[in-house]
Image (cartoon, rainbow, N blue to C red; front, side, top):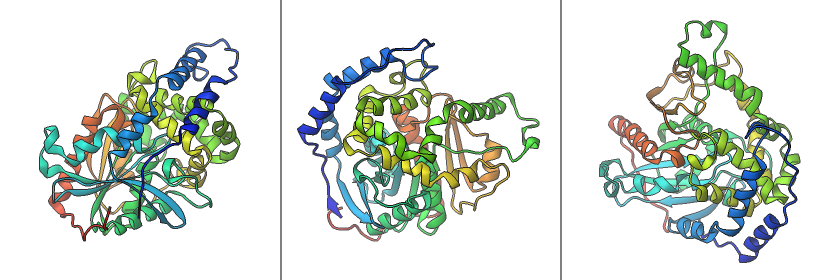
Length: 397
């Protein structure tokens, strides 16, 4: 395990700013707001803010406050934050981001989770945090071979936690991270004490499941239908031809910005602009990581590798292997919320279900306090049934 610091050369930032300034913009076509994609006027203003006002060095300083490392697992370089709690009996927690996210998603919850007493919570709810960048994403860098699906990432996380000396821990994730975490519960059930997710897909097994649904549950099903019909184009492209779109994203920062910011608008609890739900500088920090690390293609590859997994999930009546550890589900109803009865059928080990009427897909960015509190509550129930233990830390980590 090698210590790691983020130190982007100034030349790379100068190149980014030059490319933004030299953007060749399209002529705006008629349309209403976001109905045809990211509006030209909004994107021009955001790109200019990115070029002239956003302070990447502030993001570097903030991230470098926390211990970071890299290690090679199964042929891939893995970057991770390892932030230990001042509490000696803290619960180990591995947290996994999704797409188009990064470890930036968790910056607002690191200190409340590692040092709850300093944030008005019970010191008994403290965590040691391990926050990896998914292979092919961010500072884990581009991957160089195929096969990195959710299960392979989960096995890599199990190995990472073993190297760190953790014999028992909780896994948490949203988006891709939810399915990596659930797979981690499957591949390492003796080590994983529980899995907490803030995204879960559950579909009706057949027409009979739709009979008798409440109006709110029917609306959830209809929202998923709309996602498949209208909002999933990015996923279908990246799951079938990830390299084709990546050339433009890797060459044009404004193209990368538009590709990501659209998701922050569509998936967050916002009405018009994503900044209503997510801090603008954190949003741009996330986009900047994709740009500076040239990981548009390798991050898209996870969709390609996981397409069989996703087909299984969205095939009515198809049952996956059960998750043999407790599962906690955090639902923000403005997001694509699952129907609880479908979820409990597919994941019978669900022991905690929480719903809130505010917040969205990027849970830790949008509602960090609710997010942290729900993880604490879930881990508390896990502690009550099986105490976490640690074998001892790897020196320097």
